[in-house]
Image (cartoon, rainbow over all chains, first blue to last red; front, side, top):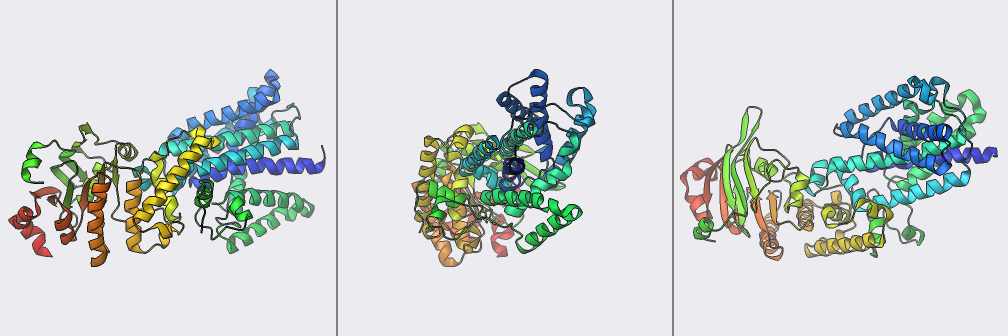
Length: 300
Length: 262
């Protein structure tokens, strides 16, 4: 595997993960600071079934997704009843919890030493395919009534409920969906790296996902994808600057956030209409324009 | 709608002995009244009389401490708002609750959540059926917006609309849910006399066109006079009087505690 392929695998695994964060934070307004824990759950589940039971690649990935979704349902049920900040605090607790569980259960996960011997299977085309599917599903979700329910819940939960939206179930759906996406990314990561250790999935990693989402544009799926690619590549390129790397990385992000608080792309969405040069002024999280276009309506 | 009909016909909505306490304050105290199918009932009373709390209880936003709310023979008190929405009760808010950062059309389509009848997986895969339902909902939303004079601003941001149009949009959003009972909380607040006259017409028109039963909270007395078949007067959480405009207007208690004040 070439160096470039390795870099791109990392980049597109991040693209997959931030699609989940976009669903949670961008569309639904839930700030999860423990999203890396779901990546960990997926990665470890896939790695464990692959190393212990010699499960094939696809089956292991599926196990990762299922494990992540199951954990999200268990964690989501109590924590999604909490209000905004309290929910975020709960996800921090969850993030630390998973990290400690992985550290402590030495017999299953290898503890702090890590889980080793996972076969190196993931290639770039696997990751690209997975990223493409994830992006397509997230786009469809955003355009359907459940996507609109997320946005209404974020904007005005009381009003959303009055229009028949079960806000709690909506949050559970989106939390589980995001966890499934993270689980898939985790599985791909496990089969790419070949080993896993708990410190790869701490709270700072979760915070980094959030930064990528904010950087590109919290309310723009396009922005989240491009922002993630840009920041992930930037991180790689700054490797040359050694110790200064984090300083430069943070400075660049700060400059962008100060001058574009809504993210580089704001609420702009890539669409066929835009390609055709028809796009007018963008408004709202882009859902509307696309929704209208896809419903066969011409816009003036 | 004379009082004869009120005595004999079964109630479409019945509020029975409803009580709600916030801390030490009895916001609603043993309130009972009935609404017949197809009626427009005015709910009036001084500020703080508990009118909006009654709406919150009927629409499930607030749970009553005691008492029943019966819609078409079914007890609905204590249900969640989204469950009550499914039973056909829609409402507008006194303080506008639009999704301000979304476009007007997107607001209506979001409110049409229950009208888009497909499941999660269908939506995720965007099956042809989903596309069909979505385009029907968009079409109906646009039609409804045109019907209420909002057709031209469908792609504008809801928060950018002038106040009067925001109020109309709230009504359109309630109507897209195809309710049986519509609760209007101070629809005329902040409107000028012309707009208020148009609103009176609109309330009658939607009642007839959408086969609605309507309860309206209002401080604008000439609107209440012109649209209400029946009026319930509240004061300090209790029912002070009820009846037709002429009966209520002459009621001494009402005159003293409310109408006289203005």
